[in-house]
Amino acid sequence: MLPQQRIAVLTLLAAIFSSILAASPASALPSSSVPVQQRATVDVAVFAKGGTGAERLELRIDGKTAKTFVMSTTLREYNFTTTTAIGSRSLSLHFVNDASVANGDRFVTIDRVHVNDVQFQTEASSVELLGAWHDGSCKRAGTHQLESLTCNGYAKFVIGSAGQPRTTPPAPAIHPKVAFPKAGNNGQHGCIGACPTVGFQDFDGQANFILQNVVITNPGGPCLSLVGAKNITIRNVTLRNCANSPNGEIDQDKIINIEGSANIVIAHSLFTDNSSRSLNNVDLIHVHNSTGVKIYNNEIRHVRSNASTGRDDGGNRAILVTGNLTNNLIIDRNDFYSPGRNAVQISRARRVEGIRITRNRIEGRKAWDSDFEDMINLFSATGTAEVPIVIRGNYMRNGGPSDSGTAIILGDGRDNLGTGHVRVVKNVIVDPGHVGINVAGGFEFVVKNNIIYGGANVGEWTATGLTINHYRYTPACRDHAIYGNRVFFRNQFPQHARSNDPGTNHVWNPGTCTNNVRIHSNKFGDRTLSYKVWDI
Image (cartoon, rainbow, N blue to C red; front, side, top):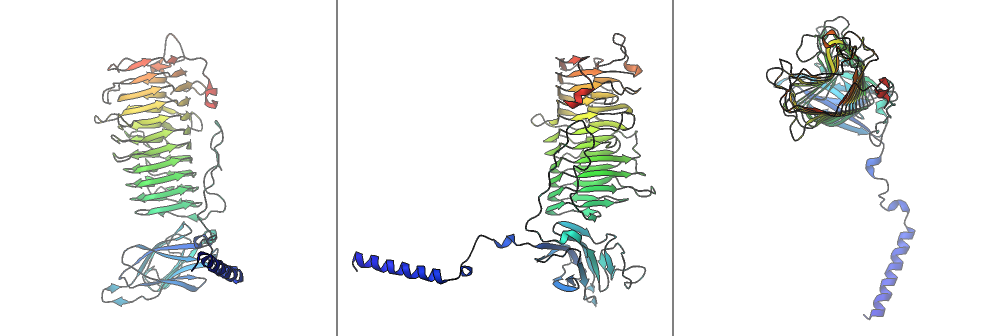
């Protein structure tokens, strides 16, 4: 074929193909502009198990069976997706093949249901059960607050707004923090919109999950458990009235327990009015032997208990961190308002790396009404020379009435487990109570460029702006650098009276820390300071 003939044939074929395309309807052509995964869906996950491995559990919506699951004998997740809203309609799980068989009696345990990432516990008071063993039989339907069906029956859930179709999980609303010095920021954190109320949330052993826009409450008990969990995000959640036992019979010392977990985020949430009346010591958030935990931009209010002043590691804490395996922990930009005797405590955590307590605001209601012991307490806790513990850029005010408490205490410890490798930089402290910053022993501290003012609320507990003293119960006080700090502190504590400047005691240094302790370039008695430093 000659080149001219070859060109003519190709031209003819192109014309024929074009005419075919022109005659074809547009819908016959594949399109990638609307991917399948963008369809609006409702995702349902059921966490359940059976007694023998042959149990059948039917998922019904408005009484119609949507899917049937055959149970395993170990707790696992069963999934269903629909493009139709569930909304306020009935979602129920029905156990349909109860029997006594050779390998045992059939029964099902329904631990919980997730609808669009919102968790519904089967033992919640809103769930109606039939088939649960109650009062000697399975016959009566009711809100029995159980999670196992021994006989044929059902668990009926009230889903509410969580059952609306969605294309992707909703992004959290990020609220800007109000400017200092306004207290509380109430309404700036927590759940957004019409949020369902749920009970205790159990994430033990779970991974890759987001919980958001719910209200969590569990009077008399804990509210969140993350033991052995990984990649869990808690955001825009309101948590209230947990471990609050009106009759004083139920004790709960860990309202949120994070243990042996990795990559946990708690953000943009409100924790308020959580307490334990009968328990002497209660912790709102306890982090133990976990890594990659980030607690930021939350509001923490009113943590209460009958805290014991006799305990050597403090009383009730808003955040308690323990364990030598707790690394890469960020506590940043949180608002603490009347958060208990200790806002943040790092206790008996040795050679931890990557712990940063930064840009938080910590306040009592009034100097005589906050019951602070220490706002930030490092007790027998050390960083490393390469990666020290960092306390930077925090605003703290209104401590007391304890006559031993501080805004920041370093070097506290027992049993020769001192505190070391810590950087305390650019914190602003106003009316902290007894002492502003207390260097009580320890090793390798840098305390620099902090502002400490005491003078607006002076009580009989107010003593010293900055203390440098090797207390007898702590290990050696050595290798500290304390410089660039500005302090003005009025004093009514008789043991710290100053004859040359009555009514003030900016620094107390009895000379007991002598092993390479460098104190220079500080401005003690800086009369340019006032309560307005809080506004800077």
